Length: 441
Ligand code: SF4
Image 1 (cartoon, protein in one colour):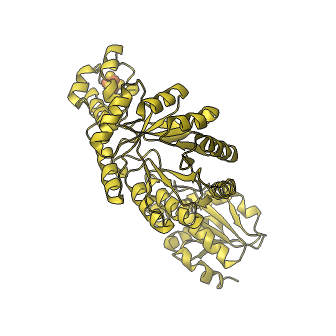
Image 2 (tube, rainbow, N blue to C red):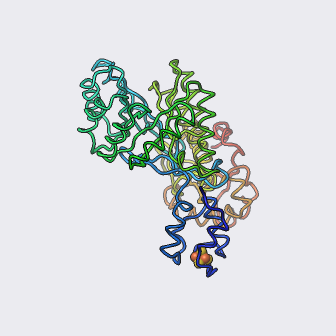
Image 3 (cartoon, rainbow, N blue to C red):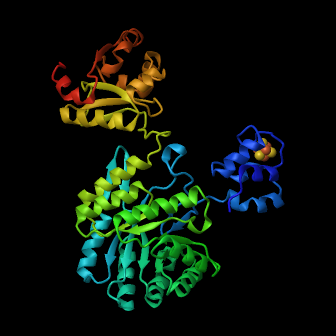
């Protein structure tokens, strides 16, 4: 049972020194009880108090690491705006061992080829799940070995047969795969196998009561590296279970459910499957295992994931240096914008569409858009001109034209005075750039 803020406060040194980042021990106790602080931040906690507070200071959802460093869990809030989400939903595509060797190779090539760049970030699948549908332990081990040799992605080994899991796991133990699924019938053998090989294990039981029962039994075996699968049959039930598991772990600090949650999709039609997976990415799957490896569909899922897991307190930014689009020369137009990724890539895309090689300088506005930056005093003419001179662009162009975003036309006069350049007010929206370029000489 979690301790209240006052119960935690009784164990703290009561020096009110502020070294933990909050002004008083009481404020620190409250932050600790709500999972928004770590006990280690206070250097004066006694060993006795540390032991007593261990459960209160433990994260409500344990971080589980597998494969090539894939981390799941370690979340502390229900909603991103409460603080932040730490780990994006891990996306995994499954490969059945019932496929032929050629089909396995094709699937693997598709999985490895799923790479995307969006607003300056690189995305790919995190894992491959080898599923023992053949019922044959030797075939399972062979396909697992083939997949492991053909990809560096994190590996999951999925079978309810402990012997098949052991055959596949032992040669691959150094890849630290996530194994499962342990259920009420086989949990002793599978959890012990995971424990012997120091790999995390998926516990699966349908219904939260049965899952709680299974976690307690598995914990009694002296192991705690768990990932939970509520085993729900429908999308609606999965969503309800995911929400309840997150709520119980975060709000009630219910330790049995303080683990990452993994779900498998049910739909077989790829489009329906992606829609189903979108529900789980939104709320609250730590990992989703899909069947489809269709690139066009997975791009939509990764875009959704990016939108949900990008922390608005840390906007995605591009490097505030001079960028060139196309084969630039001394006559190329020169644009300035901000280093907020979405703004920059909108401008870059439109400049590219104009088919006129150009220079673009994203001014460092700490990742804010044009109007926000101007309102915050981060897009002032002095600062813009200082950034332009430091970028070296004036040595690369022989004209003295600077194109500024239409929304900050107000800075044009002062910028002209400072730079002694011709300041051209561009369109307000990047979508107007192509038409705008036709007005340039
Ligand atoms: S660092 Fe420790 S003693 Fe100092 S205010 Fe924070 S909790 Fe209290």
